[in-house]
Amino acid sequence: MKADDLTIQDALQWARQVLSDSESAALDARVLLCHSLDVSPVYLHTWPEKPLQENQWVAYQALIEKRSKGVPVAHLTGRRDFWSLTLKVNNLTLIPRPETELLVETALALFDHSPINVLDLGTGTGAIALALASERPGWQVIGVDFESQIVELAEQNAQLNQLTNVRFLQSHWFNNVPKQTFSLILSNPPYVEPDSPFLQQGDVRFEPLSALTADENGLADIRQIISQASLYLVDSGFLLLEHGHSQGEAVRQLLEQAGFAQVDTLKDLAGLDRLSMGQWHV
Ligand code: GLN
Image (tube, rainbow, N blue to C red; front, side):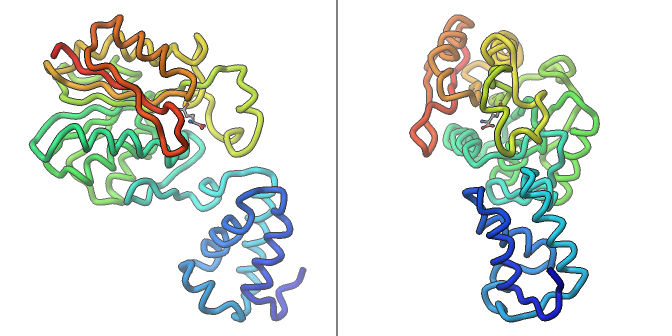
């Protein structure tokens, strides 16, 4: 298609057609057009008859073509919103998911604004650590991840959101965590079974397996975190872990065996088991 007099609404209609196999076709078409034109969603609504420039149309077609091959929208725009923050994302980490906001909500409900130390294990983009730091300026939050490039990404996101009460370190789980204690340790670790058919479909194919899969039916990393967490928790401190919807019972058992009390599982908005938590030595 040529750009001659092609309007915003023509471009959107064309893209919806190309993406029609996807449930999110209309939304993806709009988000990617905003990105190509560098405008807000309101602009698209207000100026549907506005013609595209040739270079904008070329850029948009390229994005829609990649999206039609399954590349996640967040990889195409390089951005994803999480909580109240906009985060830079790339293909080294998991794209932050809305259901992970349950970890943030739960953490905020457990502690008030008093200063505490918080540790986010496997922080990726820094999503959880940054959301907590933004809501609780008095907290000192540390986020760790195993690769230096991921730590750099999380640091960029702290700067982007002007958060100074959070720092990021390179550490594989607890290996390089400073010898101090935390009131709250939380993590969205990899927990998908390596042979899960879920990994063969959709956007997840473009995300790193290191952020998604774990041995022992998806429980290997969760087990490792639970076995070491108590060494880093204050008395009455909490451990919060995201997990798969069929793993609630297994994770509760691991927490209880490790000596945690008040062990509980919470459901996400879809009504599925999403996180389990325990309190150390109450
Ligand atoms: N819940 C994630 C998904 O739907 C998996 C994330 C993870 O392993 N931490 O892809």
